[in-house]
Amino acid sequence: MRIELERGQGDTLVLIPALLCDSEMYHHQVEELGRRRRVLVIRSDGEESIPSAADELVDLLKKRALRRIDIAGTSMGGYIAQEVALRYPALVNRMILMDTRAAADTLEARDTRETVIATLEAGRFQSVLDGFLPKILSQQSLEDDKLFPRVRAMCQRLGPTLMARQHRMMLDRRDTRDALSAWQKPVLCLGGAQDQLTPPAMMRELADLIPHGRWSVIPGNVGHLAAMEAPLAVSRQIAAFLEQR
Image (cartoon, rainbow, N blue to C red; front, side, top):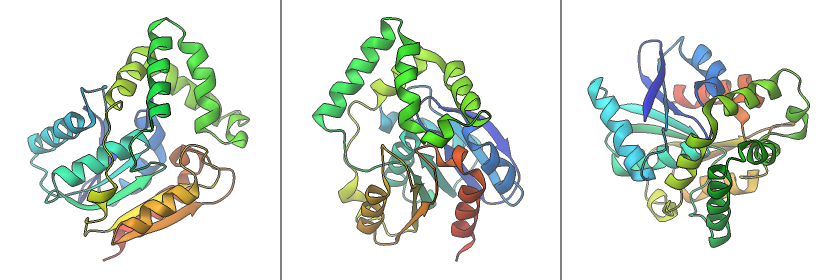
């Protein structure tokens, strides 16, 4: 894990990007939310496992003497955020889970990850990327001549080695539903209306199993990367959630 970006002062919000994403995906949230609080973007380097990623993230926070945080993660970042909250409950005040899930991978999903890893290691990154982008963006976003090049450039910049490492990190991801059902702090479950990978119904089910879970959909042509596809709406939802007492 590495701290890619740090902005602002005050209460700390940790943002964890999705698979093959970096601080670029949270550009608007950092700029907007960093006016009122301390915002850190912490990116995975493809650690040994989700628990080890959570432990490394907490070690980074300890080095900065941060003992209480709010935490948010998108997709893979949401897996890490859950693990941090569940392993270190005294550390986390509130959690925001965006376009993510709590159920472990099915056998089919695990086989798909193994296939992607093998394809990447065979040097076919561009073919993987060509299949990946239509899954994480809405059709409108794919046709957006400003947004789509940003997303593709971000993914290409991070590259095949990191993508393979991150997929491998998720192979044995645990099912966190039972643990979340006992979580007694506020959680916002937020997702895009057109998300193919974690559709609104899945996000609502996630919120429903958490005692203090709240569910919200970002409307319109918004896919799996809601933070980039509808940045203002996502920033406003996060701000409103964090400002509630």
